Structure formats: C-alpha cells, structure tokens
Length: 496
Image (cartoon, rainbow, N blue to C red; front, top):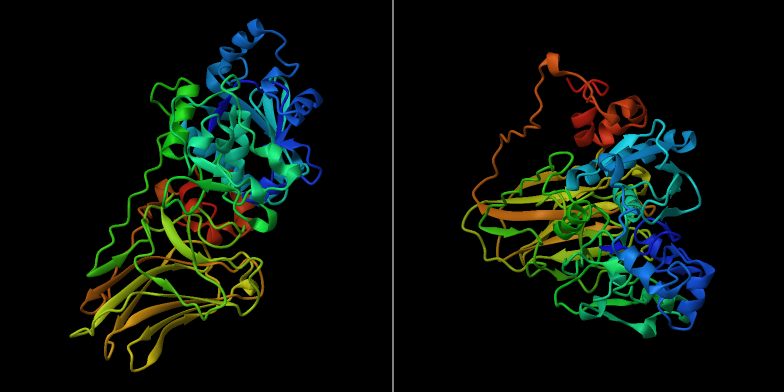
C-alpha cells in the first residue's frame, strides 16, 4: 500500500478483485484503475514521469505538494462524512459490505465514518459503472462507485483506501526489488499499467513491500490468457493480494499517515487462533502438508488466503486464524465445468492399532444452492477405497463446519478429498484444519457463541448497523450471515 502525494485530479476505477485488474477495455487507465489527465497520459506514452504533468508547474510547487496534508481527511477530527444514494441503499448486499468496510477502517485506523449532515467535503457511495474512487480528499462531493460485483467488504475497503490517499502496492518505487514483471505476458496496450510511481509522487512510510496488501494486485493482472505478469522474487509466495482487509503493514501505514499515535477508533477485533491438536495435523499455513494432487482428476485443489474469488460462495477467511490464514479449495468458476473433479491425497499412514478420530473443517456455502456440486472423503487402505463422507448440498451459512468420523483402516492408508463441480460458478468447496488422533471421536462437544440469552440484553446494536437490521433480515442474512448478525442484529433475528 502506497501513500499517494500527487492525487488531486486522478480518479481510480476498479472492479471487484480480481476483475478490477482488467477493467480497461479502452486502454485509458493507469495501474488498471487510475484515470489520467490527458497531459499525464501524454507523458506516460513517451516514457516520462507523470509527476511532471501540469499539476506541478515548478519545483517549488512540487516541494509544497510533498508536505501538503490538504488531500487527507485530517480536518474535523479525522471524521469522514459519507452519504449513500437510495438506489444503492436499497440493496442489502451493498449496505452489508459497506458497514463491514467502515468497521474495518475504524478498527485499523483512527478515522471515523459518519453519515453526512451538512459537511462540505464528503464521500457519496452510488451505483455507477464499475467500482471506482477518487484518490484522496478532493473537496466537495466526491463519489465512490459500487456497481453490482463491487459489494464485498474487501473491495469496498480497497476503494475507500484510494479515497483516503493510498495507491497500489505493485506501483511503488521499490517494486522491482520484490517483483519481476513478466513483460512478455502483458499486451502492449496494458504495459503502461506497470510503470512505477516515482519517489516524488509517493511515500511508502518506511513500510516493507507487502505481498498480501489489500492494495496489491494478483499474479495474473492484465496477463494474456491469465498468464503470470507479477512474479514475486521471494520463494514460497503462492498468492499476491487479497480482499479481506488490512494486513499488519497496511495498518501501520494508515496509522502513520493519519497520525493516530497508536490509537484506533474502535477496538480491533481479535481472532483467536484455532488450537489444532492431534497425532497428525495440517492447517495449510506453510505448505500442503505433503498432500499430493491426483493427476488423473480433471483439475486441482488450490491453496489460498482470504476469501475465494467468486462472490457469494466459499468462506470469507480460513478457519485457523479467522482472517488471513491459508486453506485449500476448489474454484467452481471457468474454466471448470459441471462434473469436473479435483482430488487431494494425504501422505500414507501406517495401519493403526485401534480406532482413530478423523477431523476436518469444511465449507460448502453458496447463495445459490443449485450451483453446489459434491464433496467426498475416501479412505484408501490398500484393501478397499471406502467413502466415509459425502455431501451434495449447500450449507445455509458461510461458517466452517467440523466433521468428526471414527475410522479403522485395515492396512496402511491415505485420505482422499474429492470436490466435484456442480451447476455453476457459485459452488466453491473448501477444507482446513485436518487432524487424526488415536481413539474414538468425542461425542459431546459444546460450542459456545459467547452470547447470553438474557432478555435484558436482547437489543440490536446502537450503531450504524441497527439501521439496516430489518433489511438484512429480509434478505436472509440472519441465516447466511449468522455470526455477524449475532453481533449487530440480535433482536431483529430473534437470537435471544
């Protein structure tokens, strides 16, 4: 994430990650989502520095811009006034994502997002064409466009990031120390998107390059036929960017830029790490735990952190950390098609002397249940291949489900996870936190949601979210987004 200094006349346009990277059919955007002035574009075309465009006429003006804080939301006690058009506000998915994005920013910085009354400078969210945002505080009304496909929390956090003065990680001046650009995989019309910001334009605030930043594009951004264009130089980096929210470095930059002095507007939500135990465990945090892909299958399970690329299906985050940890999943979108199969095999285990407890957390959530395919788990013990679990229906919400199965293989064995594509792109299936433990599985497991049934505390939250509780309830979110609704809309959802 990079602080932009020269941002007074630029506009950023994005589609949801990763679509936002390729939303430039006319080739007029810089970095995939920055609309340049004609003068800036001319200088880019001849290989110049856009900081020399007409915005900064003299060296004296340039020096002033580097120290000018007028582009930040510092006045009015770092309050960011906002409004929303009726068209967008009538969409439950949009308001749900927007409120979550506000929370993310307030938990990771000292900014406050307050509905506008009569403030002169403010942000208005509306449903325009695509996802885009101005960069920095430009004065007066400034729009953030959130079209259909832009309503995920992470995408809105990204767009707000532009409005707060942050650019893309892959354009920062020191990028080439960390990323190799595969120019041969980039169309000529897209190569301008990989030009670096000059040191005169940006300040990275002494923060290291962040491969996981919510402002970082993916490995295949602008690639010909989805080929790799951004190749990390650090070994073991299997993914670039995410659209969950702030990383540690993202938060550091926001806190520094807005002079937060270590204080956030709201307490930061703590995600306790799952305590994975067993004689054998795998949480996918560092590697695939020795698992192998079945080469006879149609496609492969993929390792990922954050949410899956397809909207309305799959988990929002991993199970281990609840935020930016790693898990594996099958992507139901193109080029996969109905009945395509992916199989992931564990290593071979010795024949057990007695029964064992096999445990796995899985996610089969989809807002369109008809698109979900099938999830199977097999035990191959060299004698038979036995199906120990099969499910071909969507789960009602996107929480991780724990599966516990007693197994007693007849010989050396391996476990096989099979995902089968269903009727459409909203059919992602994910697994995480696998364990095998000697002995039978526990039969009485108490799971607490830490919410009291005391009727005296049975109220919706006294904050922004309460205004939308009825809308979200009518959209079915009391079921599909149960965890969040228990925090903000307990009364509306009859959780108490």
